[in-house]
Amino acid sequence: MAKIQLNGKRITIKSKLSIMDLLKKYKLNNKRIAIEYNGVILPKIKYKNKYLQNNDKLEIVHFIGGG
Image 1 (cartoon, rainbow, N blue to C red):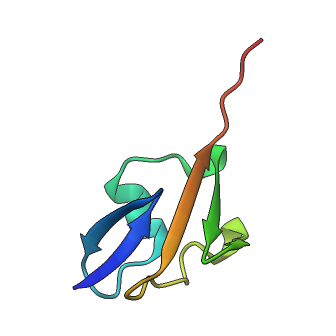
Image 2: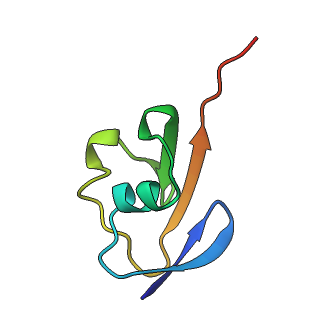
């Protein structure tokens, strides 16, 4: 198990969980979000291969259309 910070809240996740796995767990569409991983914007191509570790910090921002 690992403890990470997700949008300002501490949560516990399974070890060896990728960012893509986390998005699936929370039912988030990866086409309409941006992720800041430990202070750096993460390219979508890295979501499958970036595994979360203890004390990582994620900020997930949703894009919403409208007018």
